[in-house]
Length: 195
Ligand SMILES: [Zn+2]
Image (cartoon, rainbow, N blue to C red; front, side, top):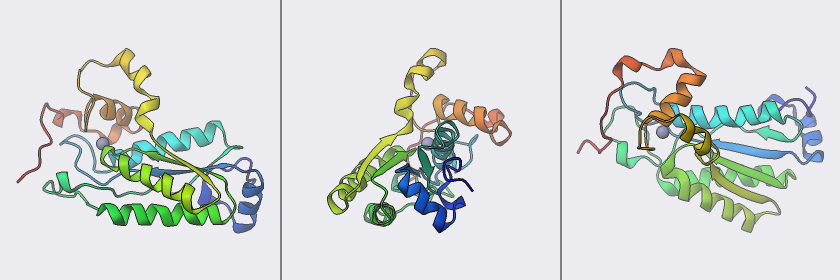
């Protein structure tokens, strides 16, 4: 592969990675969760949406971006009573992500971006970014992808709430993979924990 055209980190060989480092591409780590998202959406909403946004960035700016495989799990104790939800202790999540950013920095990439899709990970990815900056020679920044979509969403939204498994996430999932959304199951509800 030509590292100027390939934006998926693990599709390159190690020798091609050397060229990507020379280009000083921004390395993007999508983070999400495996978590209940109502009766109408699959468990992968947060990671699927975050990764999809990152891959679209890659398609549009392949010569400047490399997207890592995403982190599928996050902090989730508040939803653990919903079957399927996976919870990672915050220390595990931070250490795991930090090991990835440190590895990327070790190879010589100087710009790393965490793009989060799960609200409860927000303080953790922030901590990962700061710890990466302290421990390496790379700049590292964390953000949520939603922040970049709120203006566009404001023009089309029909509901007031912007939260979990809501109109925002449902619309985006419908746009990307409508065959996996069970709209006949969508209903107003709350996500309070079972116990
Ligand atoms: Zn979500």
